[in-house]
Image (cartoon, rainbow, N blue to C red; front, side):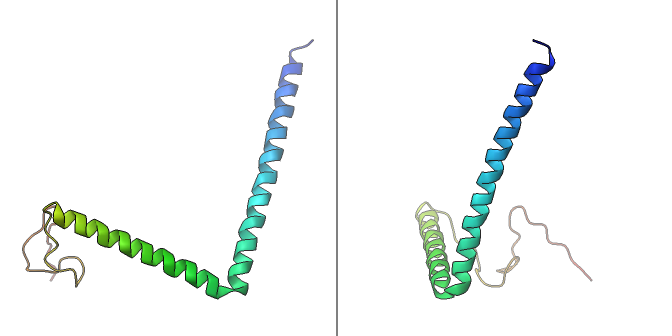
Length: 100
């Protein structure tokens, strides 16, 4: 047996693994395309899924806010108006920079 033989076996094994992985990627792409096609053909089902997901995230955020309040964490001074909104008091970790 020469030294090249084990390299050839390893190379062949690596190529077999790559071939199987490539076939798996092709199968995954087909599945994703099937889902995309279903979403285009029946958008109402996709919208239902999106609505349920958004509702779940909203519920989880509300639950988290309730838990934080029950643990004694104060809500922000103003939830409207975006960053920097509120009573004008500096927040920890925020540096106000005057422009103009």
